Amino acid sequence: MSAGLLLVLSGPSGVGKGTICRRLIERDPTLYLSISMTTRPPRIGEKEGKDYFFVSEERFLQLIAQDELLEWARVYSYYYGTPLGPVVEARTAGRDVVLEIDVQGGFKVREKVPDSILIFILPPSLEELRARLTQRGTESGAAVEERLRWAQKELSFYRNYDYAIVNERVEDVVGKINAIRTAEKCRPRYLNLDFA
Ligand SMILES: Nc1nc2c(ncn2[C@@H]2O[C@H](COP(=O)(O)OP(=O)(O)O)[C@@H](O)[C@H]2O)c(=O)[nH]1
Ligand SMILES: Nc1ncnc2c1ncn2[C@@H]1O[C@H](COP(=O)(O)OP(=O)(O)O)[C@@H](O)[C@H]1O
Image (cartoon, rainbow, N blue to C red):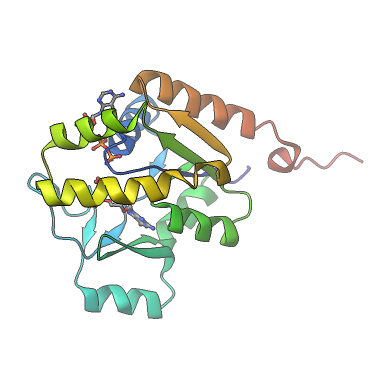
């Protein structure tokens, strides 16, 4: 059995990554969505072990020291990282894995796992991004502005990703990601069959 694909989804805050991931899993429950560790406090409605594992800074630094994270980064003054164990386990079991992480994390994953697939989610426009962030209502005005400033920086990296998809309609994005999964599984390196 071939190992599952490692898909990295990045894009600015509010572009719709979380919404897209939820829809992907609804459509295909065999997909494994990695749950990150973070030192950010939980938002109202967020659940421990479902949205994130919420940990102290001390615990996070311990996880780094023990090499238990596939990658980690500091985003908006908090730490975020991907627990390594569950990703390896799921891929070994043949499940495709999705990481929803920032671009710094995406580049670290590409270094460590050269066959990972980096997908950038783009907003239809900066105005629409602002509207989505504001309408979500989880951040204060200042935090929205900080995220928009950060977004401009993040967006400049989209050409370094393997794929870029504009999130006009969530259904279309999900269809495109599933098309990428199908195409990637037709690569000779993925099939790795032993013909003489
Ligand atoms: N490098 C890295 N980034 C992460 C991880 N988990 C989440 N992020 C990124 O951290 C940023 C902030 O996430 P979050 O606090 O949930 O805010 P949101 O993007 O506005 O929903 C986003 O760009 C996420 O993709 C992780 O494990 N590693
Ligand atoms: N294609 C879309 N069209 C309109 N609104 C969207 C679309 N995708 C996501 N949204 C909305 O935009 C907001 C931000 O989406 P979210 O998934 O939280 O973004 P992210 O995880 O990238 O920060 C949410 O209110 C969500 O319902």
